[in-house]
Image (tube, rainbow, N blue to C red):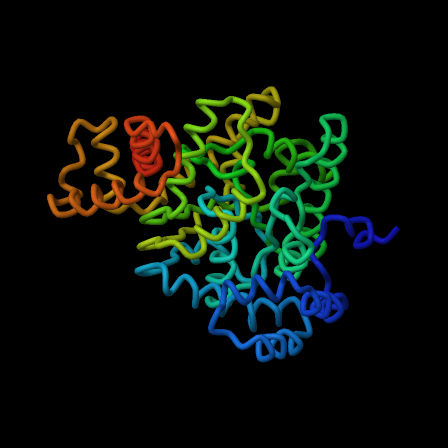
Length: 381
């Protein structure tokens, strides 16, 4: 079996598959309907013509995705900045591990910023729980996404993790493609960003070396992303109360779609991405004879530190931190007007929550945590 064929169930599409997949998309009534909702001013026949001009994955990203991302985010943000390009080399494949705020935008924005600065885009890890319809899977795999299978039994998990690890190593070492993956499964809804040790164990399963050797092969780079405002903050707070009141609560497909839509089209204020330093030099200093669990914890903390130190903060972060834990220690970072603006924003978001028994103090605390935890974590390192 060819290596490429071995990963057919999870890999992105390849260039020879692009044209037939695009024809499937154009023929899908749901895709046409969704396109009409998202881009009401877009003429369908012209858009279908643009899609038919696409011949490769690179074409799809540069002609379709990057334009859509910057056009959409341009309307829903005040500014977008990215720093740290001096820490990565063109032509070298990296595993970008980042904190995770938005289901769709985090990786798409990062790839768009890489492309506009002359770097190749990264392949994107996406959970199969988000591939709600065939057209979403087609779009994701055209956009260089590979699938993380989450809806499997515990018995299948080891096999699925090993397969995923093997694919990521194959992408980095043989395809020479960078990879983006979130530091944990799903978003850290309280913004207390911590790298899951299970992620590192999965990444180290393949490679044919020891634990540290397999991780070094992946050229891990921590990436910090900061949104001034998280448009999904009220939905995350609402989910916290739903889970508190009913431990069996699970989001529906409609909830996932609402989160995607809100994240893309809601106001984000200022946006900042920062590439940290590759962690291989730090891995080289670790004692390979330490117990594996201790090594895993140490590597996770290295990635966390790389993310924490490169956050970009805005007045609302400091206001939230002072409200929860800071005892007014951060007042030099905001004005009375900043407090009024943040309070008005907070009240507006709380007003969007639709629950019969809204627990305002609890919901307020949860939204404050989302803006305060990054400050708390940076101060602690």
